Each structure stands twice: as C-alpha cells, then as structure tokens.
Image (cartoon, rainbow, N blue to C red; front, side):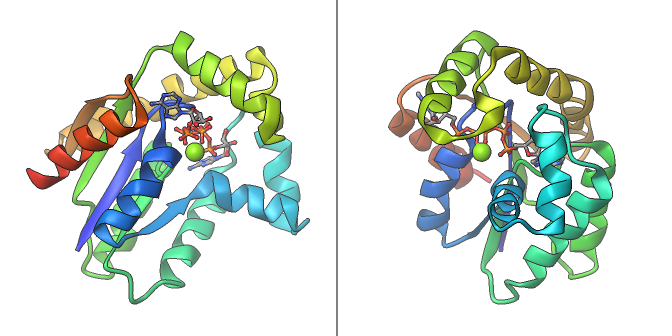
Length: 190
Ligand code: AP5
Ligand code: MG
C-alpha cells in the first residue's frame, strides 16, 4: 500500500499532479479543498461552515476537517492506497492522521512537497481565478493570506515528517509533465 501526502503552498500543483499519480498508482485521491467545495455547492451545513473560512483564505477548524477526512477514507475500504492532497495542514491534523491510520494498520509512506516561489504561485492562482469561480483565487490579498496560513500552520509539518524520515521535496517549477516525471522518479525510489 502506498499512502502519499502531497504538500505545498496554494497553487503548487498538488491537485494537478494528484490527477496523474492516482491513475498511475491506482490510488484514491482525497482533496479536502475539493470536498469542502463539493459541500458548498450542495449547500450542506458543513459547506456553509467551511465557506466562511475559505472565502477569506483561512483554514477551516481542525476537528471539522479531520472528521471529514476520516469519513472519506472509511468510504474507500478497498483502496490500494491514498493521495492526501491539502491534508494535513496543521500539527494536530498530522497527529490525528497518524493515529487514525495506525488504527487501521496503515501509515503514511511519504510526504512530498512541491516547491515554488510565491510570485509564480500568485500568477497561477490569479489566472485560474479568472475562470474557476473560486473566490479565494480572485484577490491577491486573499491569496497572500493563504500563504500566511501555510507559513504559520502548515510549514512546521516539514520537521514533523523529517522526524519520521518521510519528507521529500520536489522542484514544482517547470511544465506539468516535467514535474510528474520528477514525482514518478522519487516514488520509484521510496
Ligand atoms: P485547497 O483546495 O487545498 O487549496 P490550496 O492548497 O490553497 O491550493 P490549490 O488547490 O489552489 O493549489 P494546488 O496545489 O492544488 O494547485 P493546483 O494543482 O490546483 O484549499 C482551499 C481552502 O480549503 C483552504 O484555504 C482552506 O480554507 C480549506 N482547507 C482545505 N484543506 C484544509 C485543511 N486540511 N485544513 C483546514 N482547511 C482546509 O494548481 C494551481 C493552478 O496552477 C491551476 O490553475 C493549474 O492548472 C496551474 N498549474 C499547476 N501546475 C502548473 C505548472 N507546472 N505550470 C503552470 N501552471 C500550473
Ligand atoms: Mg488543490
């Protein structure tokens, strides 16, 4: 079983690359951002709650996010493995994920960070904001706030996973194909 965490700032390419990796390795892709957007679209209570945070570029509270993620894993008992995209994003989410997986005799195989500079990421996100309908992509100050949240709450997870010898970093600048190739080579060495 391979369980990957795709790590990286907003716009780093987590969702784009997960779409290739899930096919190649037959994994279930779970994006907490996509799950929240699905709930917003369907006007669920969870969606209403999440929207108030996401529209500002703030993280949604931990327990809500953890419960949603665990329910999604439990919905896929036959999975050959998972790609966790955009989760965990805080220390308490990382610990919750480790405990939850351990309870199923599973574990994270590797955490892979896609690295790129803020200016490139802002450009990608503003461009997507022209067509995506994502309110958090449409205004540079909200994008910068997402980076702040990342720097304050998510970046510290690097040392958490380094402490487990599971942290790997990949250059996230280049064509989408080039980056897929870098990831494939890294995964082959795991
Ligand atoms: P989420 O949906 O996870 O968004 P994000 O991490 O902020 O960033 P993106 O999904 O926009 O970036 P990505 O890395 O997936 O890049 P993508 O492949 O799309 O989260 C949204 C919100 O939900 C959060 O702000 C928070 O409120 C909430 N949330 C989610 N998870 C949470 C959690 N665990 N805890 C608490 N709250 C949570 O690519 C971006 C763009 O760049 C695309 O247009 C793509 O086509 C383009 N692109 C990709 N690769 C390349 C390339 N190599 N060259 C050129 N363009 C490229
Ligand atoms: Mg994404």
